[in-house]
Amino acid sequence: MKEFKEYLDYFEKYLEKLTNQMVVDLRNIVKNKPFVYRDGKNETNIVGCFFEYDFEYFSISLYGLDKSLNQVTEVVSLPTKLIDESLKNYIIPKRIRDFGKNIEDTYDKEKYSEDEFYELLEEYNEKLREIFEKWFLKCWKKISEKQKINIDAYFSVHDSYYYTDLKTMNEITENEILEKYRQSTKPKKLVYYINN
Image (cartoon, rainbow, N blue to C red; front, side, top):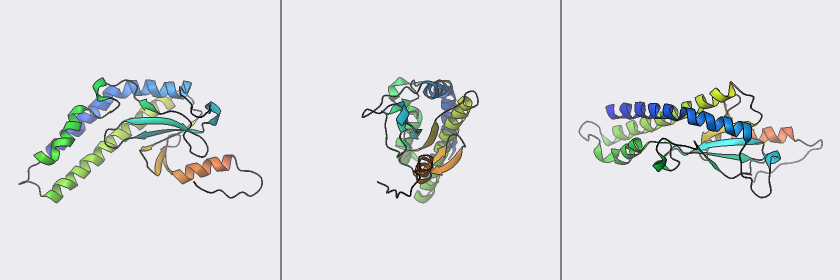
């Protein structure tokens, strides 16, 4: 559908306008780690920063985790400033959000069967996610090229088992992340670990 391409292009341009703010926020996080800690924890408890985004509104939540992948900080929403502050912490612009809400009522039923329409809609949503992920990774690369990053960081859609390791830009699973921290603190004698 022609409308999908128009909205995908609009989303890309919109994200470009947010790039400078996101880079400033990421640089601040990496340099200063401005977290509010939970349950008496502190900076020494953090082994990694996790950036997760909501697949519907593309809001980004950042939090620090310990070696057991327990959350030790309060959530930070990114970017800290949006183009349209009325959007709360949603990154997706209102124009695209409204289009998504109304599209099922407005598609040309003579031109597309219901199955064809839903297939196109699925492709459109996947493209939105691809555009968003590429944008975030580009912002991360901008800061990581210019400064040393001393903390592990991971990026994914919310509640995913799969992450992008922001140091290597490779996919990593939650179990692989857990194992990484177990290896770094492995005791000399044999111990069995049980997942919670």
